[in-house]
Image (cartoon, rainbow, N blue to C red; front, side, top):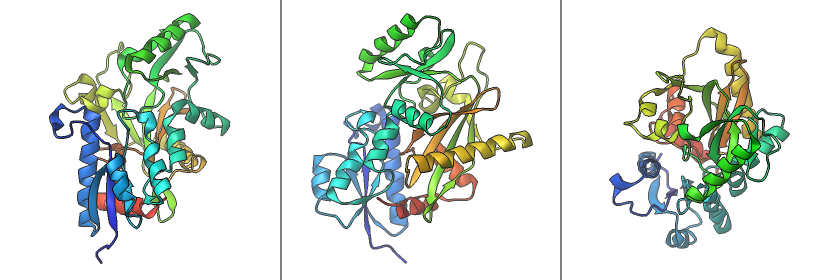
Amino acid sequence: MAKVRKVAVLYDNIIGEGLFHHLSEDNKDNIIQRDVVFNTLKELGYKAYKYPFNSNSLKKLSQKKDWIVFNIVESINGEGKEIYKAPEKLEELGIHFTGANSDVMKTTTDKVTTKKILRESGLSTPNWVTSSDYTNFEPGKTYIVKPENEDASIGISQENIFTIEKLEDIKSIILAKNPLENKSYFAEEYIDGREFNISIFNNNGEPTVLPPAELLFTNYSQNQYKVASYNAKWDEESFEYKNTNRTFAFPPEDEDLIIELRDIAYKCWKIFNLKGYARVDFRVDSNNKPWILEINANPCISPDSGFVAAANYVGLSYKDIIESILIDLN
């Protein structure tokens, strides 16, 4: 039976959207997500609309409280740390929307705060240092310097990984990064090992943990770090993109590890009160110990994304994904 409810797809307010080919790859992806979600909603029988996140859209939505908002806003004015403002505004308007609420979005977008909660909950996450707290610094360790509040691998590159002997060196590296893009950075201990992402989504009121995906870094030299960098995710012409691939196939000896990863991902869903859909990213060291890198409460759901690939792997169509996300509303 055709749906009668109206759904607004709320997406990033991207300056210069009409010049698609000139946009950054992550901005292009947000538009691709918008269009595929919009078209799928129409196929499912919903009356669908597209709304960029701006004051005009919010004014219109304030008069449509019986609508549902499918929230795929990933940044506001180019700032990932502002992402929580989209659900916050929808909460103020009293409109039901998909995905995490504003408190959860604010917490999980702050990677340092997320790591503190993980530690307090007894879950393993790599040591880190910030521009104001160097308590966990260990001389001689390798660190990767990351933005504190960005997703989509923004700011992640081979050039951001250092083996550091002196506290003064890591202080200068973090402080030097901050003015470059007006973003706050922290340094996280680099775990030399395997990388996994696990997607989770609501299934009739209960979280379903999808099969883990491992990122395979092939043909990387000994001088290259195996990380999911911005190039690996977005730049189709780069070495990293061409040699970073996803697999869901694992040998029998990985069975215990896979069970453990899925169990930890489920715990993260509960601890952070996630809704709709989410993704947890891991590194696994040479002793087979999992380390949680981050939690993405609003992961990419483009057709070629890891989330969609995991869902497809267990026989779920894109329509199935969208329907399931719509069930678990705020």
